[in-house]
Length: 195
Image (tube, rainbow, N blue to C red; front, side):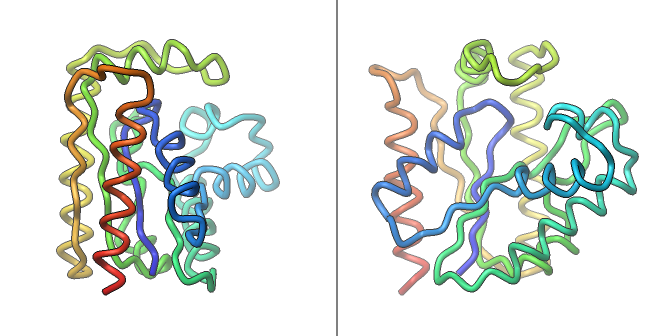
């Protein structure tokens, strides 16, 4: 089984998937972005992940994305969870993080979208000193979450696979509450799909 877990950049998706791994150690978590970066570094001289969307031509981005998708599709683990984005905001507009071709290469069985309060996403991005992100508004983050839904539904329709939306658009009462809640929901979805 291969599932995509996606959210807007900087939302805390990787933290969620770290909790999923603790709760469901049989799952293999793979970052599609790491695989794309691995390819782009080797073939295009990209030095960091922020350069991917700024320096690569559209054709180069597609080539790197398809490389990653094929590599994921060839994984033989029983449960593979793909950490990725459904939309990528570039200087020329949104591009799909998972196209129909990539979904076919990955052999997807389901999609899980994590949605957060835009204010929380922006606060998490400020804390992440490893990445350089463009300044965005809450409206920008919310718009990208809607774009994610549209792109995810298009893929789900083409492949007749389910889309689950985990709603975390509420204020946390304690640290990592969203991550723990989202991990619980992801594990429930995995178990449901395994039946």
